[in-house]
Image (cartoon, rainbow, N blue to C red):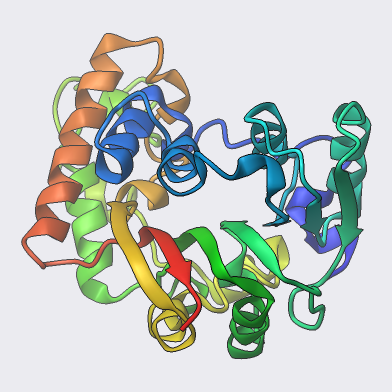
Length: 303
């Protein structure tokens, strides 16, 4: 992947502002789904449950380390053994190396997971939002399996949605139905509308709506985006023993960037209240089996 087409490899860090996952309300909701506690995220939950007594001796591999928050958390949590921090984005990797230079147990490796294989054994492998970018998914998963220590764990937070975001008609309709519940004042596309507190009319919905993404537009943003999410669930089940699998949503909300003001939800009680309406609708759709959840937390072991 070239620098031009890797959004995580710019001269400044990639930001998730404006996305659902950056809001405090969604983060707390996700925490409850994974750890059972709105204050405890997936990483401290996993480390406390599986590594509380062995962190100082662990050999760790962090895939897709980007700006290094996972690496920093490991170091500050007392993981003093060797940590390999890997990413294809060399600029992001360099920023992380410079920022975390105080931690001498970290080695930084620029690697393409389509072909690179790491020499184990690793007691802990962490993959956050990286595996759905891997075209050679089966080979990558087998390589990670073989790199795990016999009593090691792979912790993954992943997206399992359709190839290149080619959502089925049912999902597109539900995304638009959810958006159409909102007052127009909380949607993009209605500046200065004379009925800001009302939902969109039938005529409004012919011009302001969520369209299925165009594959070419996905490739122009990042040619590796969403190439393997549709293969992940079965691929992981073949390659590993699944200790935990906890879906945490995203089926509607992850597609509403630019349609709903997520960036204001932390400060506006009114916007946050409508965000909770959207979250409840998404939960209802996934919990009743109408739509599948797309974001999933995994704890995996060797077969």
